[in-house]
Image 1 (tube, helix red, strand yellow):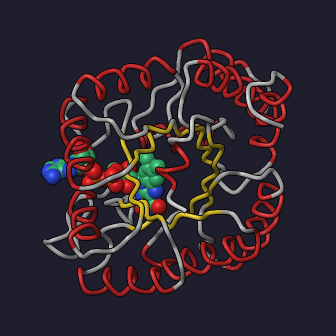
Image 2 (cartoon, rainbow, N blue to C red):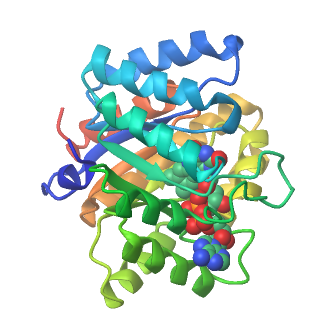
Length: 290
Ligand code: FAD
């Protein structure tokens, strides 16, 4: 089923992002996480794509669909040539994948600029156009930023290319992680003012640890509110930070749900505990269905 249709149903969807395993050492934790979170009946999930692990993404997506009967979306990036990208899309169509998150992708080496493999696929909008003009029937998602992307001169630049992604055929958008809901509300208001009608799903990350927070903020451009940063700085250890992250995320989700968001998308980093605690709290407050 197309995710864009689920997002229009008037009931917020709950979804999880899983990271395709980079090697065998990550498989066991991932399997446990998928099993635990599938038990919470998400409306849909998604699986990240990396050049070296592309086949694992496709394998995991099809397995989640068949084994857990949960709609699973494959991420796909501009990491391949156009011909290879078409082969991957053909394979996904044959396997019954219904939704693709079309991205440019992170550079393979952190801190280095992204080097396109194919001049026809340099930005996410190129991949979206390729999928649309080739006649595939996939629902297409795209990423967007609520704050300045590290590579962008400003937020206007980012907004312009978000408009291009929708004009190229994206059916829905998922935001980069953010810790202050005002950024999300500003983006949605600006998008609606510019005539963008597609659902914009907030992407949420419960802070896992001091180290992960620093990696993720530098990669995404997300800023941490002064009060949250102060509490993190004063925390004794990573477990205390994890608890703070969960509490902050619950408060974010509650406000977003009250504002009528189309869904909540959790960046899990292949850990089930924080999303499970957040969902339990939101159910307890009757903000989402049990
Ligand atoms: P783009 O939209 O191509 O943007 C990249 C940069 O180029 C931005 O600064 C943008 O403003 C600029 N830009 C865009 N279009 C143009 C244009 N036509 N001309 C000039 N400049 C332009 N990365 C992975 O490697 N694998 C994943 O599975 C993955 N999953 C993600 C899931 C989500 C929900 C999000 C938010 C991000 C994900 N990322 C992933 C990271 C993402 O690909 C990077 O953050 C990327 O730098 C920006 O997003 P994009 O892919 O949509 O690229």
